[in-house]
Length: 383
Image (cartoon, rainbow, N blue to C red; front, side, top):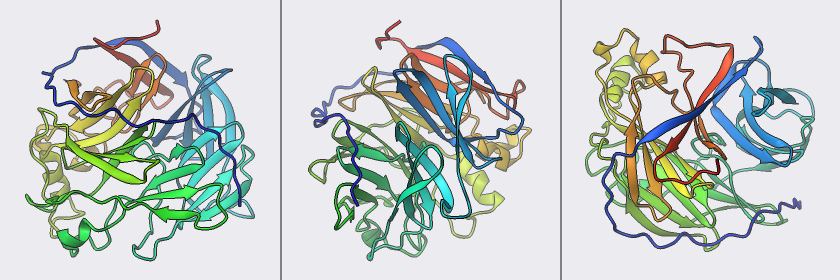
């Protein structure tokens, strides 16, 4: 099997400096984007992909009501194209768990059971690549805002953050599990390889914590941002190795939730989770050459007239760290309560787009997509 993908040549992330920068960082709302949507469209906020082309800027979002991905023209503020997804027949994609549009008429789907399905814009499956590991039980595949597919020339990189038998596995064995795979798209042998990348030691020295992480990339470097650890992982795609760990701590994130099997999965566990801080999605802004690392602040669920599950689905207190290309903290900002919708952000040429259509806001409107375009003081913008 040979699949040709042409990507920009890459280089290593510059060496990290130890300079300390005092937060906070100021921001302003540059503009607001509102796109009307049809009644049949139920947006899946877990995957919002910004696409810049010669014909304009587009936002791709999956419809949860109808199996399709819709491309919205940002400038024209309307849906411009629909990619059908099939659950039966020769183009069956299985249970999809995210996507990546990589070019005109080329779409990668993360499918369960774990396979990468490569489709055209008619929804026709052109290739299918099983993702397996004889040393690790792979039953989960994803390409969403947390861990999108990443690329380097003829290689695709994917993440499988979770541990098998989470409450039984020892820390010693947990730090020996490989979580990142690469797919050699031009190879006919050894198509899938698991990279020798491991979690740092002492991950549970202060209690067993959520193992999930987010990631992004900058040129040759992959930056992994765990949800319950201040340390970022710096990985070289070309060298297939871990370069370093670096702690980049928010001044607001201080208490991580220690998971308990007894409370796991019930309201008790949710309430305890809400009380604690946690990091969230990390995004690279190629236009300003900075990273954004979102985080949640702990809250007392009794202080809100919303169920614990409603609060957990849309955490009320969200903040953002602005981090330099050298992984130094530039500053951070705390949004107002329920100001933005977690998970639903993307970077565009004009700035950072954050969804303000949070279901817990009084002005929530299910008939529009609504984003504030925010800009940070000290960063350069084209207009």
